[in-house]
Amino acid sequence: MESNIKGLVAAGHEMASELKAECGAVDMRSVAKLISDLATQLEVQLVRANALAVENELARKAVQAFCDVVGDNTEVICEEVGRDGVLVILEAMKATGNMPATDAFLAEVRAQGVEMFAECAYTLEHHDHAVAFAAELRKGGNQ
Image (cartoon, rainbow, N blue to C red; front, side, top):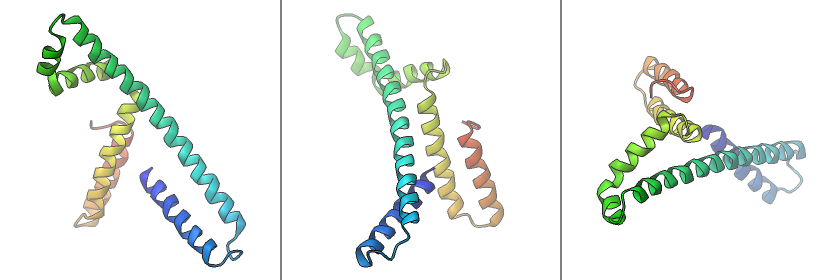
């Protein structure tokens, strides 16, 4: 997905430069398609961001509920629980399947990392294997 977004961004900047330099020399159908593609990608990113925000709020509430249960020393205990305690809560939520947007986001981040490796792979075999592995990660495999 990111490569598609990068391509749209590059095309948008290029077309904007062409429009500034030679207004009228650009095919308006290309401009219309680019605008439509940009709008579609923005809509996709908005839906994705909203889903992540909902899951983040659920995770925040779960952490707060945990802290509320521990009683008078909530602040001290929350400081003690720290990052590892929050990760335990998030892992528990993930195990129940309540974080699909977060899982998809993390799969995309992992896949992008593998694709970065593929770009600098020493052999075609390594490159092809890395690209296939990135696709597998996007589908939810090998996490």
